[in-house]
Length: 382
Ligand SMILES: [Mn+2]
Image 1 (cartoon, rainbow, N blue to C red):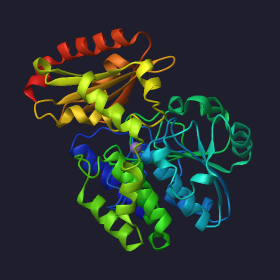
Image 2: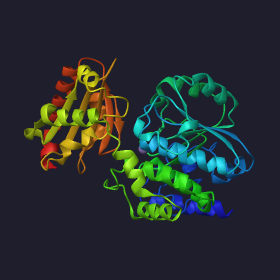
Image 3: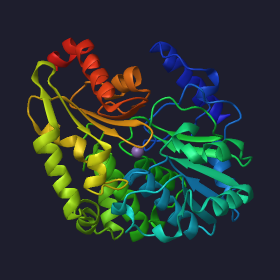
Image 4: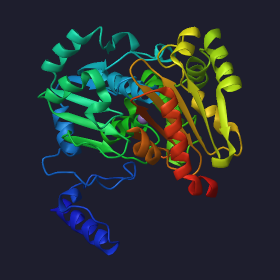
């Protein structure tokens, strides 16, 4: 009854503010300050609420945790934070990564237990079959799991999704989704808090959550970093987090070759286009080979052009084996995600997006410049 009254109140308020969302979307009476979102539009009545999740987790469960292909710091950070938490709660969790990931993340607590495709595919598929629940972290679209997507799509266990990317595909039965969150790891903290288990956060969980937050927020610089994020981090330090150590592990792990590759890209490959307030760096397959650049080792390179005061939009365009991959970064309100969706079949966040191009590297660069021309007035108004 209480819930229904709350629901009615929310709906009336929404009407007053001309917010359009379905009646079903209102069945979210457990929202508290730490869930600073209303509800996604496609919330449906079959969905679990927090109480149902709590009940489900009240007995030991086999839980498969997975994330997007080529996982970054937030993908691995949120997944391993969840892994350590579930382990502590007496469950049997396994983290499955759909692909390999950067060496700069291999120091993380729990890394040795991660099943990594393609090598561990058999083990991963076996666990997927047995799993009582599948947790999908830092992605909301099967496509993002590449070589794991088909198995995941066909899996019969209920799926829950914890994520902060736009436009969820809608495969989940429990959803913790907030596109304003600075990292999925922030949402993992929120969930642990909502489950009443903040006191269980130990050094390992804190380390993993912190890794997700700093890598996805540009070390606290992006606009989606709120006072609450800093309060979360304060509580992580109370729980034993050694933040300096984490920064060293993540950011000071370059090989000499990788650093020289960055130098080469900045000195010889950076193209600045002042007429668009934009820049780009394009990288050939030969350069990747010459400098022995491995998965995750181009991470961070795309940010350098934005150090130029007049540059508001930058791209890193890399010729990979079968496809050209793009990383896009912007300052202020220039929509990197919209740009990526329009020209490079991609998406992401306002200031950080990814995309791809099927074709030649030079043609991808030409398309990027064509896009800049079309966005010229917006770029110049930034
Ligand atoms: Mn993320």
